[in-house]
Image 1 (tube, rainbow, N blue to C red):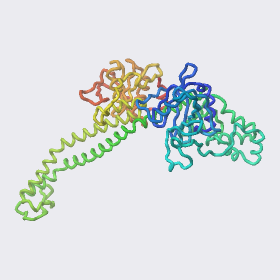
Image 2 (image 1 turned 30 degrees about the vertical axis):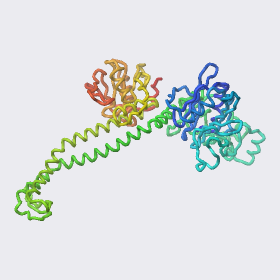
Image 3 (image 1 turned 45 degrees about the horizontal axis):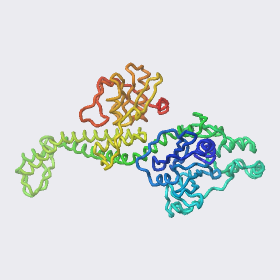
Image 4 (image 1 turned 180 degrees about the horizontal axis):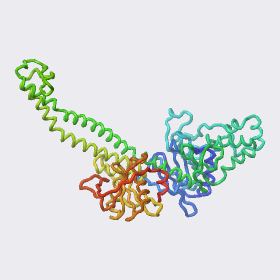
Length: 562
């Protein structure tokens, strides 16, 4: 289900006791549509993630470490000026709509008490975060400034009067009395009645209809509504294995329970971890991903063009034959001729047409064919070398794209730094200090046997893991002839099951992650070498064994450890 009004009602039941009366100590904007607010309450810090992402608008408490960017956007600077150090006095939902107001108390530059509201509107592509002064209702600033011609319902700019967006009229199920229910139920069937209840998305509405079709009574309605005042969460799967999260366990939907959690916030944190990482990586890597795609496009065209040149060079015998035949029949060539048909003694004297340059003598025309032949033959070696260089560059950018696909948000800086050092990106004038690769950067997995597997997520991490971190007797894994992560099994004598599980991890963190049959090479780390001058991530190895595996996302990620 989506972040509908009833889901927000459930979530606030767990967030309010934790955050209200806490002091807002830190504010940052790690990505374009996301804010992180750190509250200090009862000697503990709590991170509130607020996202105005059009596809996944949401807020919840998170324990995931999210990097604070070096440069703060304008909206964050405004929030810090007005809200940092303030006390959160209350959190309230507007009815059962997707609008939540965080009410703060703070002092201005003159020391006067001011009341400020941070309004979080979770409305798909219209999602926004708006700071306004509670005393006069004027907007101070907002995450997304909207031009008046783009939204005529209300003005969303600083200094404008804050107004609620147009809301759908409906019934607040929490306030509905038994008498009001009976009045509504008398003139409506279950489906029509459920359609009048506010704050329901499609799944919740279908579930409510199921309750009322079983028993169209106030008691049945209250049983459904009261579930949103309970704690806990349930993750369920659709028939197509799409994951959905609910604050209750639905019985009337065609879903299969995957897991449950007594803490709704914790469940949300885990539920959105992959998708949030994916979105954040996309936001942070957009520049380098454009570069990669452009380079891949140019190189692909170049290889096609070079292969045509090679084919033409390898089929250049026709120029030599025409030159020889022309030289053997110079007497038949008359001045001003543009072509001539002569017997081809290489093909049973069948006639062959030879084009001529009327401005050249017969002998010079023959020499022109020999010159063309020699030039093409001499180019074969050079063209082959250029094809190999272009293919090497394609493989390199494939490895960069694979690294982006496997990246956490904090890994993008390392990939960017690599492209700068390779000369594909311009070095910024004020480049921040390069961070060293450590084991903290790597992905870690624990096999069924308890042994540890380490995975590099980009070329810098791969080099560090293979050439510096790994013991010489550890087992090194890599997908055969396909870009992917370097994977180290920290054990000198692994079992067959260890090798199978580690190989599945290597296959998953490669370009072939969605393939059914993936060939994975494995060998002791001491047999892996880096040639002098090789690009980051490139190694050679000997004496390897191979195993074929089918990577499954759920099975692989279930072994991951923090």
